[in-house]
Image 1: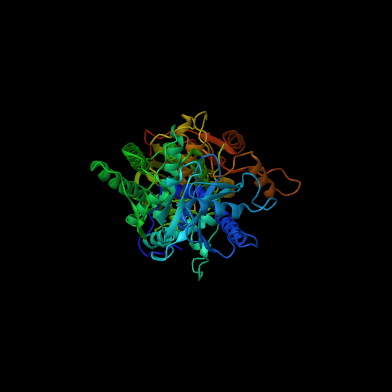
Image 2: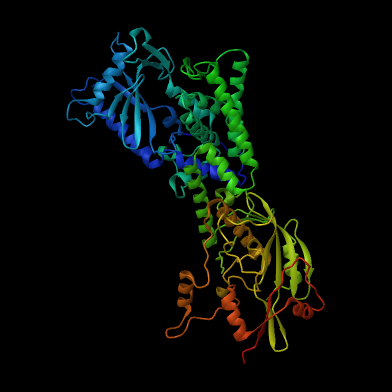
Length: 410
Length: 216
């Protein structure tokens, strides 16, 4: 659950409005979020069934990564697939190898012929997890071996490739749960922003004074930094997908660590994006200057190296720096853009044409409905039409209602 | 109670940067910035207060008349005119804006220009920018003769009667016929004479005012 921060007020801005709508369009919807929870709870029950090799040994199955911090997004422009990351904390017998951890979980989920996950293509063994495929999402379940000497929920995850020699198999230190808690602590939500993103996520007004706020709703009451993270991830996914040689992209968790560390320093989403990109780039430049590769650790467990598989070398590091340079320049240009067709093109180049057009249409439809219903707002101090902007009704934005009317014409 | 031209001007002047180009007893022309969240536009508003002169009512065809002075408006690629703009003898991008549905009296001379016309111009500009970016006008509204207009007209027609004639329409063909039936269009020169010596600023297009004669 995101913390709530009481400071800052909204400044109505079209580019922020579009960015929020883009983020809402690419994020895991509340409906799909509920479905994902339902599915992994079903898998947990399945692992505890009679005859399961893991019966009585599954301590907990919980969300990690983007799912745990409310930052899950569609990774591609042309499909609606979401990757949901989970940790299966299991009591492993002494001497269990990394490959045994993965294979045991794989077979326990796959089950017997005729059972629900058995069919070809549903369950897949990966290097660090077992993937369960659905039409609209993948559940990546990572088996963990808890290390009681570490902070809560810290442990080892397995790294083992079937085709690779056993000498390359390893147990990797990890504490994704601690990471998520740390991330949430560092990214308290601005109340007005949380309200806007909640309402847009659910497509309806959310009761602001509800106590206690249901957990699934609270996950969508996001901070600006979290939405900036979602947009940065989207951009990174899109640009690395276009790279011809299948270059490995920087891990989301490494980006998330930086975002959390620099959160809450700005008052507008576009500024937050620029600020976060600048602070993501700075340590890369410092490492490159020193002739090193960047090394980022999990704040909840030093042994958990978030950059253990990226960057592969100085070139990968330099490429990401130059992508960040481009992102920063593009966002500054978008912030200063005064022509909507050009703003649309700039945002489409960063976040994908479909998501941007959907966001633009959503804003214009909202503006149209307000005009018709007489609920749009106007700011007399600047003679500015705030039609369609979610922040226009905020008590801190001085605005007056505009009478309903209909445009006429030949 | 109809605000005077001077009162209308005073209220408009509360907006930053608004100034009076002309203010007479029954004609006012003002100009100032109206903004969308992206940019500022210089908007000019001309309002002719209806006045009785002898046996006739003198009013403007399109009243208040609203133009965007700068930046020059553009057309969406392939379009030959702006959406929801009045036909005028000028390049399509310079036509006056159609901000409200006259037949339903969404704005009357008892209303303030500053409270309605200026915000509506701002909304028009928001939808104009959306139109330029997507090719679709999202601001709704209706056109003379289209389905919504007919629905509106039918809702006001008594059974067995013809559709109501539309007063002060912004549809030129319809208006010309009304003009022929009820009165005649007069030139800006004639109106200038009627406005006690006022000559419109040189940049103003032809006022296209109407002289409405009493029907009796």
